[in-house]
Length: 192
Image (tube, rainbow, N blue to C red):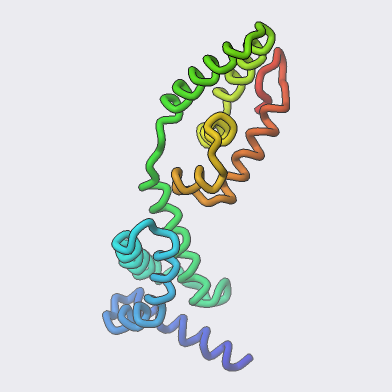
């Protein structure tokens, strides 16, 4: 237990020095964690240059928030990884190329309407229009995933890669969308 306390005390002292603007302390922090942060960034970012930029941004954030470090709440390595992860998620959200879901919806809807017309049957067309009306009321990510998976024939992995979104998020969006599509509120409206 004493070794743990000693490390926690040393980490707190380091972060206090970083907070005070001591250049040597900032270099120590960087030397200690740069490779760890880089590995995380390299796995998350689309290019090596993006990963390198993200590492620099993470360390700027660490230096600016050094006064908030509390060894009672987390070990320094845990705190550094948490700050890194948050920054990478924020950066990915900011830079994520958003596909215009409405344009995609219109093209795929028109293609499906044409295909359904070939199958014939007014009842089938009416059910399809009702379903597409409900799909179009889904939140953007859910709508995009449903259309790409069921109408576009894409795998969830392909959708995740194209949207630069984790596969777990894509699976959750699809699951929530399917639950919402199965539920009917008043007059057949989507349940909120």
